Length: 333
Image 1 (cartoon, rainbow, N blue to C red):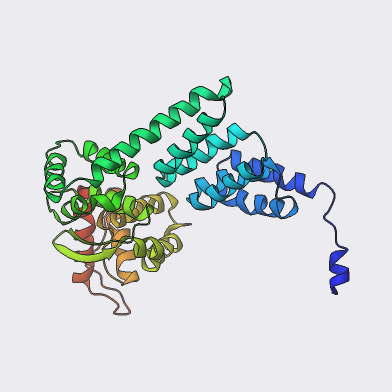
Image 2: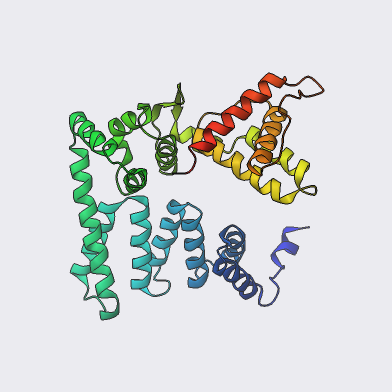
């Protein structure tokens, strides 16, 4: 097709409206992965349409791409697309998600000094200003913490009797600059006294923040060096997916209820042992998960039978089942 012919192509009538309508429907049903490409197509047709830009912002935020959402908010503010103060609130929420509290505080303070805030937005904006200010102060305290102070913080953390309280503490790391909590996290990951689930949640929190830091993590007597940013880019693991796929093939039609039990057991096992993998023998772990699933349902399983093709022995199967059972016993807290 020649360039002249391409230039003559026009979009179908109401295509933009149809894309926005379909994307909005997906978004209302929390189907952000499906909504995003539709909003992107609509954006190519009209890059100054407020509803399209707002949909893109929401989708990117929900899918963890707050950096892109920030750029889109900045476009709406700079080009005065839509309601300025609504866009400003959205922009501040994105900055808060990114942890850019100082930038949010400075931006909002400048707006307040230059303009009289509309009554319908004033309360919300002042609350956001106060929130950013408080977070800035917290960050300042964290940045000034010595290793000795972080060690005392870790002692207070391990003194909590309730693991749920420890998990709440770990979740609060998202509101702080995680790289400034490095010594605290090193203690958490290396201590055998910390529950494996707490370690998993802490590690996944660091991964979500995309912090490029190496940690030594210890679980079940094993220690390995991990990089949070690299882990974020390499999970999920192909081996783990293959085990689940073989369980599905084995049980989907024969016993779908048992399949659900098996998948839940496998996913719990992977979560608790993360970032350690149980091995690389897909057939062995498929049979082990199948066997313990039968046991959990009160059915008998012959764990002494080895794989006919010699890919694992009966002893290896019994050992894998034992490991699954031990992890299952500590999986409910």
